[in-house]
Length: 61
Image (cartoon, rainbow, N blue to C red; front, side, top):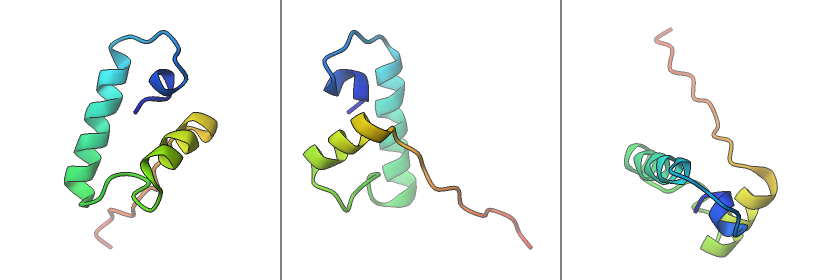
């Protein structure tokens, strides 16, 4: 859930882009972001800190 929705703020179509990104992430990684947290705790984490993904080293070295 986008933090704007969780905070009951006004939002626009950007929350749909966020939701699509979360689905795409789960499809690529096999688990949703913050899968180690309960859903409410994950939403609270996003609300309080924002959501930042770890960067993977994709080099072919």
